[in-house]
Length: 366
Image 1: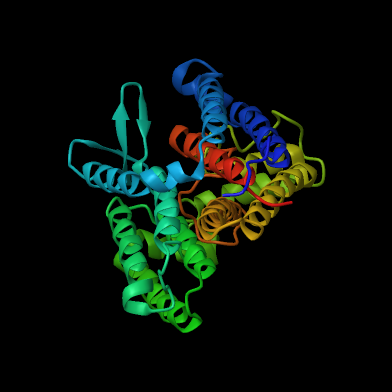
Image 2 (image 1 turned 90 degrees about the vertical axis):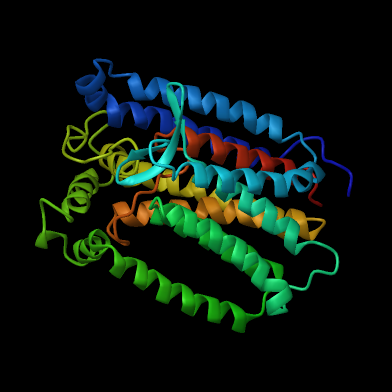
């Protein structure tokens, strides 16, 4: 292991802190009306988001000082714990049913989403598996298949909730790791073919997913049903123009656009801050992706490279899907925007992942 740098990549730190600041402000702006209507406190969601952000930043800096060998040491144990949590959340009466999915476990006044933990645990485990001395991922049966089976098992449990959005991010991140580890293209193409067939099967197996596909193609066929979310989202983004309506001046957040502070927070941001504000957020995400990929490219060993690749891919895929959904580029699926959307499990775990990325940046060569 090369000598540790004295400081992590502070370009990432600055980008993250800016996104978190924008996120807390936008959570308040997007949720104030809903929070007052529902809880009698317009700061209800904003206060909780600030606490989650503060906890996440604390954990981010703690993790940034843990050596990578500790990640390898706990990789298998963490994955097993996450599999157990995914099984527990499916137990009737134990898992919390919310927004059409049984994806949460309640802990006191808060709840956690085990699938969020699984995304990070899977990255570290696959990185450890593929970077073992003598491991040959170019061989299908003894190289690629074990990783695919573990990834498929996690995806299957998440789909039993069901949560297609999180499952898609998990698989997409896993594929990025497999590609970076050196898998053969013919194996990846075969896996992609099976994946497309499986995705079509999942869509056909659930009538509500078919409705979402139809609504994506023409939301006005069902403006008060399957097309409602997309139509209201576009009504928010369109009037934003170049400079936006002004912070706090969104019309769609007043009980028109469902989940304005979670899945559709980017719509409210675009409405209030316009193209300039939305563009600034996109630039901050691109900075994180740029620095993350740089860490992966100049990493001193395969494990560090794969973990950096996985974390960067996870954030990039989730951001692309969320922004694509709210802008009408992808069918509607429930997935949050990293660092901006309201949510404890997602925000905290993503900041822990950034802490790992900062940790790895301390070992990269100049």
